[in-house]
Image (cartoon, rainbow, N blue to C red; front, side, top):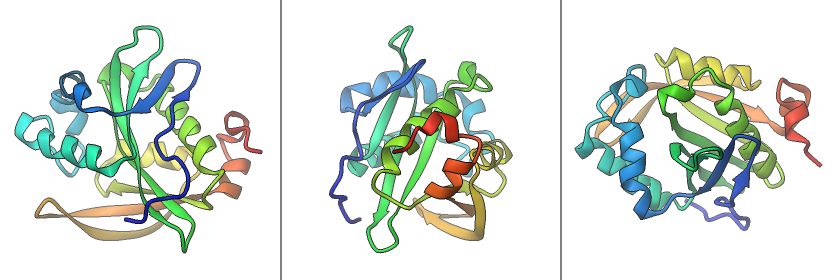
Amino acid sequence: MTRPHFDIQPVLTGERVMLRPLVTTDYDALYAVASDPEIWAMHPFRDRYKREVFDGFFADAMASQGAFAILDRATHEIIGSTRFSGYDPTTEEIEIGWTFFATAYWRTGINREVKALMLRHIFQFVRIVVFQVGADNVRSRTAVERLGATLVREHKRHHGGQVHDYTSYHLTREDALSGALAASLELR
């Protein structure tokens, strides 16, 4: 992976959430969230709620140097995680993914707020944001489509010795500015 010339792990603060760099001491709090099998029910890695599987996910997150802990600003508790990865300076794109939240935060607008914070930051530096979503993960695909992202391809993705069906979505800066998130992005 090419390291970007800009910060992909800033502290991002919204009305209800704060994203800060994920640190090793976040493991227990994040695993407490991730240990809920319902979170992974539509995900290609449906067993990620198991500690031995989550261990690899967490190690990858730390190695990415682009992972965030998502905190509820009211309680200061970790409610999930997300990350930037795969920066490509040639195409001026980066991926947002590996996002999950405690089920209590589903359908509350938190995902939209998190993505708006991330997009507001990253669109200062890239043209395209890529979202890779499991082909059968209807919940995540719908969320990405509501952001204004466009399906660009269906493909197989190799990860952790497994092959899964995935979809790739792109969201350009221009589409974001004219889409559902335009008001919350406040891009300059």
